[in-house]
Length: 147
Length: 435
Image 1 (cartoon, one colour):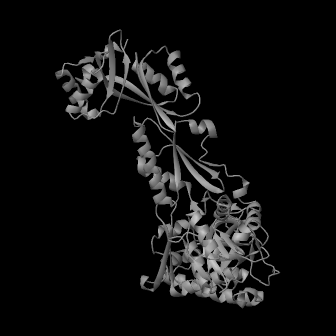
Image 2 (image 1 turned 30 degrees about the vertical axis):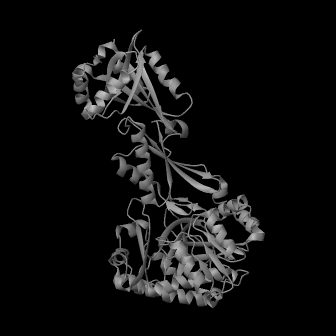
Image 3 (image 1 turned 45 degrees about the vertical axis):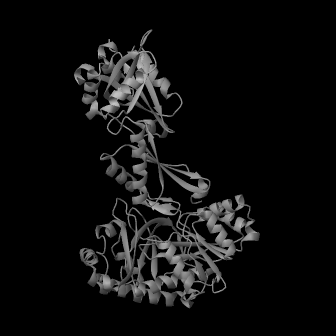
């Protein structure tokens, strides 16, 4: 399941310093990497930028050689109808299966669909995918994000 | 003057020093294997010490030697004769330990009574002691000295500035003992609280030590509190505070009937003449539990042997000008960069890149450690990173006895903003430092 539905997400450590976000995005632009989804978490002193891109291997090497601290991890995505209650349905499945959600972010995938991205503890990832599949929730394959 | 020896003719003082030095050399040679081996290596027998000049033939003792014999390896007495043990944080984890017999305590109390007597402290005084009590020698050293001269001691220790001010005012404190920066901090808080320093408080004198103080800082304390500034110098390896004390003429007198000072070239170890700057070295000549031969303090200063207007004939040392090693003094607490590195290694399992940044927050020192977060240590989660930060701060407090602020930074930030391989950035202006 992880092989089929695991999506490579890059997390980048950023100090809260002027121009830092600009430098990351410029490095990606110069390497012609397309950002498919993103979320930014912040504390008083630093932030973590999380990206799903069209070419994770290339993005990783570009950012690493530009000196950024980063980490690659598996997340998964589900596609749901863009209507009230969809997010609830997914969270309920995970909750009923005792799966912790580290964090989640979402984007509108088209006219009537939304895509939700979830990060769960790695040892729970397989169980999460199983539970969602059994509940007939549509899991998104990585090819949707990658080239 | 507490004791007439402080003003005795030099010949009398030096006769006493020689007699005591000979006793001490016999003592360490026969009771401490470490010293016997060192003496034997140099081919020196205790009987060879025939004059004070022979002192310079004797081997040095370093902080590393104390650590190597942790905890009691250099003691000359069994523990049943020890009545007090103090300890300071070591440079890489293991603390430095010092012990006192009843007789050593009497010596310490004696030199602290001499210190307090520099301004004639006595039963008429209330001594507010804001040095930290505990393993450090500062708090208890002043405490016993003030009691000895008959003053009432308020053992307030550090912190809780507003409460301290209340007690100082209500108890009618006349003498303040603290680090100079804390005394200035108290003055600033007092003004914010609406006190009028000279009217609400009757502090006539202050005993300041444990950290360097510029003339500007000294003058600010005199002006703000209206006090006589007395400098106190000491180190726990020798006895604690009470190794030397400032007289009202501003000269720091070494109580050399107990601790013989020398100045050496820090590179060659050769003794330098009076008036020359070098590393200060002390030999204790009356201590029993832990006598120390030629202890290298790493403090850089100058000695003068000339009579003082105050009537003392004791050697005068100038205020410490700097360090011969990388030791930092943060709000009176000694910190070695190696200790910081040790904590980082312990917590992370790897030695990350780091920089120590010293700055002032108001008048107090602020120590920050900037730690690079690299791919090995980067946990993808704000919570995990905050946890790492908190854990490092707790470990620093535990090992270094001070509050350190940890700042997590990106790799190469340090080189980019500070220049390469520079581990320590001291942004404290000349004010907090020496001259």
